[in-house]
Length: 256
Image (cartoon, rainbow, N blue to C red; front, side, top):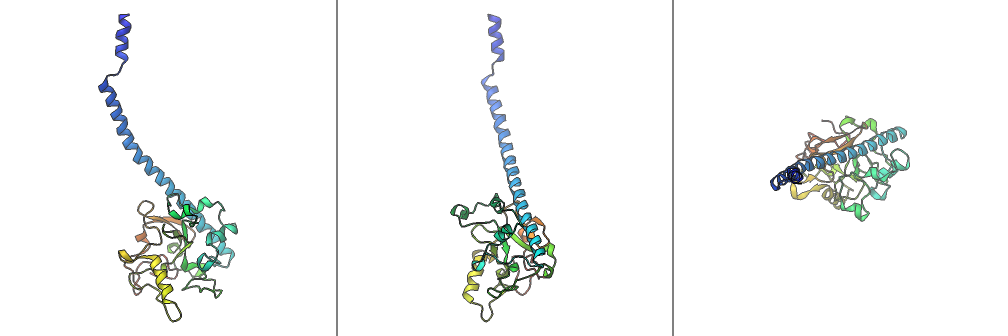
C-alpha cells in the first residue's frame, strides 16, 4: 500500500509546474492568434483579388463582343448597374458573393443599399463625361483608345461610405478638379460630384475608392484584363492638379 501511495505522489503535478504549463500555453496562444488573424486577412485579400480579376476578365470578353466598347450602361443616371449587365450576359458569375470583398464591412450591406464592393471607373462609362455624354447615345471609350492599358484602372474597390457601382476620378485633383464645368455644365452638379469624391477636410484627397484595405493597399482591375494589388500612391499622386498630372492610372487617355 505504501508503494502505491509513493507512486501516486510521483505522478501528480505540483502547483508551480501547473502554473508554468499554463503560462507556456498562454504565451503560445498569444503568438499564434495574431498569425492566424493575419492568415485570415490574407485569405480574404486573395478572395477579393480573385473577385476583381473575374470582373476584369468578364469586362474584356464583353468588350471583345461589343467592338471594343466596355459597358453599355451603368448605375449612374438611373441606368443598370454595370456588374448586372455583365452577370446577366454571362460574362461573370451570377453568384452575388463574388461582388463583395470579404473585408468590406460597409453599413450599406445590412441596409440593402450596397450591391457591390467593386466600382466602375466612370471614365469608361458611356454616359459620363469626358468620353461619353448622358442622354446622347454615346458609347464612351473603346479599349483600343486606352493608352497603356496595363496601367489604366477600370474597376476599383469602392469606398465604404458610397452605395453605387461607379466612382468619378475626373473630379479628383488638388485644385478645382481636372474637368471644370464649361458652359452648359451645371456648377451645382459638378460641386456635388466633386464633394462625393474627395475628402475636403484632409487636403481634398480622393476618398471614393479604398486606399488601404489589404496590406496598406487595395485590389484593382485593369484595362488589359488583369487584377492586382497596389498601394493607392502607386496609382495616383494626391498632389496632382488639373494643370500638371504626373501620375494617373484612371484617365484612359492620360499619357505620362
